[in-house]
Amino acid sequence: MSTGTNDAPAQLRRKLAEIDANIDNMRASLTAAYAARRCIIACLRQVTYAGILSVPMELTAEFFGHCVEEFTIGGRSPSDTGTSPLVLAAVCSEWRRIAVGLPRIWSRIGLRQAKLSDKQARLLELCLARSRGHSLEVSSYSLTAEVPLQTYGAIGRLEAYTGALADTLQLGTEKLSCLQSLTLQGISPLPTQEPLDTFADTPALRHVHLASVSLAQIVLPWAQITSFTVSYIRLLALYDFLRNMPQLQTLDVHMQRPTLSDQTVRPAPLSLALLHTLRINEQYFVYDYSWTQELTVPALAHLHLGRWDSNGDSETYLDDLLKRSKCTLLSLVVDSLVTHPGLLEWTPALTHLTVHNTSFEIAKGLLESIIDPVRRGSSLPRLCSLHITPELDELPLVHVANWYNRCRVAARAESASESLRDITIVLPWHPSEPAEEARRVQAILDLRNAAGNAETHAQFSFAIPGFYLSSHMSPIGNFVDVDDEWIYTV
Image 1 (cartoon, rainbow, N blue to C red):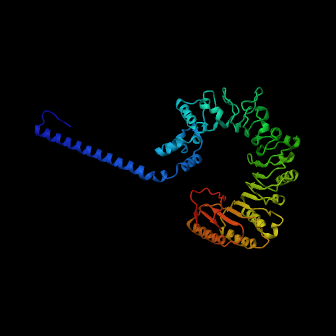
Image 2: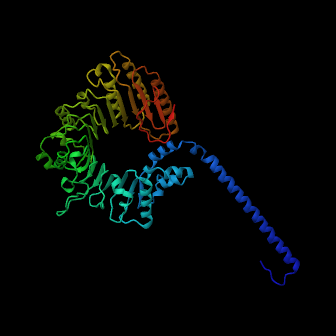
Image 3: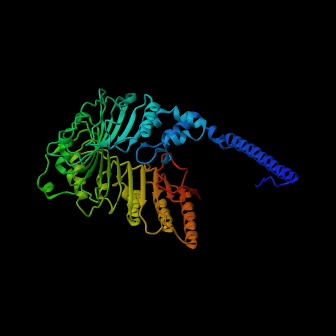
């Protein structure tokens, strides 16, 4: 704005008045903005957090304990995960007070790079300080002497550790007196590599998970181990481990593909007297049960199979295992059922059966054979819980409803078992056109009516993404494997 000396005094006074008026307007706008800001803050404090702050502190703390995941340091920022304690502490002063005062949500720490920056080191020290005396769960594949786990007595509080066999945990003068769970990822052994003895003196250690690790690579108090998970393992190497664990109660095995030597060189027979839970998983789509030929498990009560296919040798190997062990199997889980399991014919004491990823025909045949009073006498008389997840190309709800009516009539017979109390069927969902969706909803309503008229002892529950149908009130602990965010009841 020009204020040259050539302007007349009257013109200058007019321009000055305009500037003063603009200043007054700006001051008024700023005052109004501050007033609006104060109103918004008051609303946020009184309205937005009213529902949150009405939750009892103990219940909020319990929520925090379940929703907070590992505090990751290195790699991506811990605040980017959305489940960091830092995120919860930033919501409001009340949440901050709860989060800062809850040691367990600061005790699960993940270290993701070998050398921490100054900021990352301060974050780690913050976690260790706020975890106070709580036991620690630490995962890292790049621990070095520069990672200050020795501060705040962290080594002595370490309860669970996950890392790589090649990394050396810097213990200093502390001992791993509280370590209960150990997970290690191995590497191919070097000719001159000495066995790792860092965890040799761990009196509380009970749970071990090893991947690509041989017995010669690590020294552990094997005699006290009760739970063992092993991955990428060969036949003879597996038995080398098992012979050193007489107290083993739970075994989770991921076998490598069998080789010719596995068929020609077999291990000596082995009996695990205390083993009650066995899980056999697939490894790169390989389902091998032949490794059980030399095993005896007289206390086995719970069996979890990655796949069941009676067309191969699976049934023979498992049949021999149970007959040889003379055990009483109480629960069976099959992740992928290809054929009708003849396994059920020699598990009469079974009380819980869960089957996933099977065809509708096999699921229907399995259900009918269990609920049919004519066949029940020789199949599963003690079964009380049955969960099935069919794998369907389409959603034949009308056929399911018709089948349900037939089973309902059969179940009312006097010879029907009274032990079967819970039957849950999880059905898939496929996107469809509006007309197809309308037929789907009608089929769901028909299915609900069929379930509502049930007169059998068992409670039938049908879980469908977007819907939940039940013949009675939903039971406590009912299994519903639905990934959708919303479940509507019709």
